[in-house]
Picture 1 (cartoon, rainbow, N blue to C red):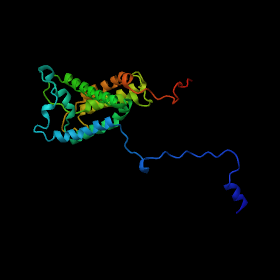
Picture 2 (tube, rainbow, N blue to C red):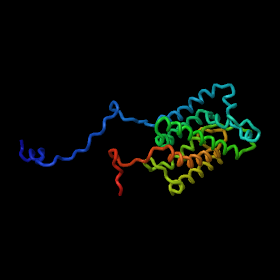
Picture 3 (spheres, rainbow, N blue to C red):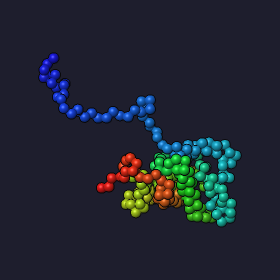
Length: 247
């Protein structure tokens, strides 16, 4: 063997040469493509399933819709809640499901365990109720039915904005990014509603006010819920009895 080549291939004695660590083994050699938490998956999957059932009802579920004028005439319950389980068509249901799976995971990961799952669903429902109620107050005399989970879904968006770029923490309402992003979303939402164009709602009015009220509810509620039920922000992993390092 050529001695020069031999010197190149045989490293001199001394500390071992660093090698990059091997990648962790994956399940069956395959990488997970979809890793959304179960609560957000259930929310998203429920929308097409419920619409499948809704389309087979004699009145297509209209009796369970929300009518704004019932806030003054009575009979607003249970429509203010059940209207979130209804949609105006397959496209409407699938678009909302897509948004739920896009914005739900950060919030679902914030709340862990069975208790966390309950908090996540409660947060989702309360945002939807705020959206529906807000829409009803704006259109108090209307007898036109309103359906859809858009208020609840935009509530997830509001919460997700305050979780972006954090390690389990919640950005303050006064954060410049939170304020700027929220203003842009609310403007786009209003413009979309006023011009009457959005995917999945062809030929129907857009309850953009419900989106706005649901978004604002999610934006405000995520803070106190995170303090009361959220996992603590990630810190230094140490043995019991040791504290996180201080700068």
